Image (cartoon, rainbow over all chains, first blue to last red; front, side, top):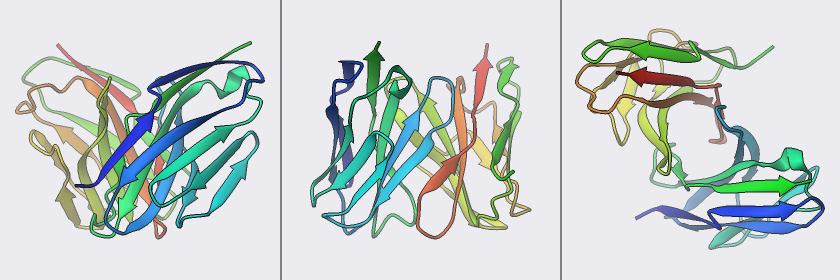
Length: 111
Length: 111
């Protein structure tokens, strides 16, 4: 069964303290892995798509990487405005465009 | 200014009443989706449509109905048969490479 597990559930960092969020997945024939950011009471905002192991993408202080079993979202020198819930989703070969979602990691960055 | 709009942002209804949530997109995307988000449960797919005049049930379709008469529009009706309708509802659209783009959401409260 296709599955996505995100860890940790919650993370609290000091401003400038770099860290990583994990997304482990089990899927038949990965078509894509997606990272989103969600602020309270708002819709998820698309960040990255990764398609194959070894791929990396960057945006400002965020860098997403992908292996055959997991993805990491690295946050370098975070700022308070990076506080949000980060969601991971995968699309497999047999899912007919349906995404399988993780429960997210709630990140708080203290000034 | 391209994007997805959902209205209203907040909606209040009495038990036993049907209610329709609006979703419009001007991104020219073929596919549209409806999700429900509850605390601690992540995103759950209600219905999706890959083309006009066609839609499929997601994982939790019972008590909901949809229509797709125009490419730009994908309204969701929450019927009185839905046992726990109070939730945050998110509409999304997508094209090609499978990432989905979300609207701002509608928070429905049924009392």
